[in-house]
Structure formats: C-alpha cells, structure tokens
Length: 302
Image (tube, rainbow, N blue to C red):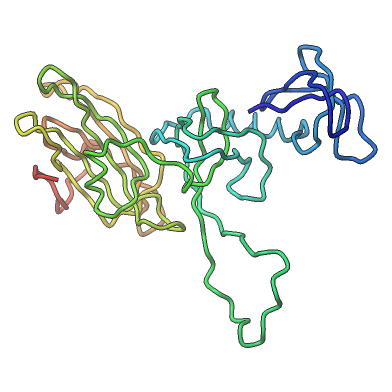
C-alpha cells in the first residue's frame, strides 16, 4: 500500500513522491487545517501527506515489540486474506493499526483470541425501560498473524480463509478448522500426497476453547482418497499445537504431534501422538499409564 506525497495542499497538486505502508518519515510541518503534514522520506522526497496515514513512533515500537514477543510461536496454519484489511496492535477493532494487508495475501496463523464485539451504531435511539435488559454479549474471534514480511498483528478471523485442500476440508462436518499441520507425505503414482492433522472447533465465534476436536487424515494410495485414521472430540484444546518427527527405535523416525488440553482442574496437559503407517497412538512418558479408553482409532472412509 502506498500514499502519495503532494507539492501543495490543494485539490490540484503535483506528485512529489510516494511512501509505502510501514515506512518511516520525518515530519517537517503541519498544515493550518490540521489535516495535512509535510514529510520527508528516507529517499529525501518531500511533500504533503494526510495526517490519517501516519502513526506515531510509540505505535510503531509497540508493533515491533509484538513481533519480538511472538517470534517463536509455531505457525498453526496458513491462511489467505479475503479482502484488504488492517493489522491491529490488539484483538479489537478500536486498537491501533499500522500495517495493511492486500486481498489474497498469505498469512501464518499463530494465536487465537476472542473479545466482545463493539458494533453499537452512533446516534442510536435511547432504549425504553422495557428494553433495558442486558442482551447476551456478542463475541468475535481474532488471529495473531505473521505476514510474508515478518510483520505481526491481529486480524479478524472471519476475514481469512485457511489453506486446506478441499479433499480434506470437505470432511469437517460443519466444524470450523482452526489449525492444519502436514504430518508427512506418502507416494501415489510417483507423486507425494500430504497427510494431515486438523484441529476443529464449533462454527461460531466466542468459544472458550481454541479447539474441541482433532482428526488425522491419511491417504489411501490404492483408492486415491483421504480416510480418517484417528479422531478425538469433546476436548478443551488450547493453542499452540506442534508437529514434528521423533525416533522410536525399531519403529524408526515417525511423524508426531503434540496438543495442549485443559483438564477439569484448570491445568494444561501436553499430549503427544505418533503416526505409524495409518495408526495413531499416544506417546506415554515413563511410568505414565495408558488411557482407559481410546475415543476413536482405526481407518475409515472420511
């Protein structure tokens, strides 16, 4: 995104330069009407720019700090923006924004937040006595994202679409996909096909958990379609999750994934799983007892 520098504050002007989103400029002069400022960019170009296009140094530094605080978070999924949108400093429509994303940009999703929605129209008529009963609070979900330029900010969750192949996404069964990890690839007719871990949640904003279900999809090279290898539901899942590999001795190097689940006591438990062929199993720590019941394991057509 760019903003034009002009040689005068008037309806008719000459272009003296252009500044890009996130670029630093020096303020040289303020117009009497308070709407424009004269600036100089790093290339020495000078001109008048609308004040609304500028953010102060404290805002810029706050965004830098946001990036430093979250640089180590593992990407939970890749998503595409539905339209041009702002990256906010906090998960709120009223929070400061500095960077702007274009429609179709790719983002890494890092962290989910849910906050009360503030959409009261200005100039609304005062409520009558009968209508003063508080309405249930409305919430909206946000994602902390990292863009291709390693800029960080919060965006409305409904303004991005997760990049998950339709062959897998069609089996979400009405749930909202909130995270997607490629566990490994298997060959089919000489081409690699990805196998996935998906984390899903109820299809509405404001849920207390980040996800309530996990599903592992493996590829059947004989029938050329995805199948559900493992599924757990009724979870209170908390992001971030992680996927990787580990050496299991005689079994060799296997894909693994770890999720965080909140227990009834409020504490978080890390659960690690391994994928061996089409079988998913819990990885238990020394001395840890196996679960009393497996919620779902096996292979079936999705």
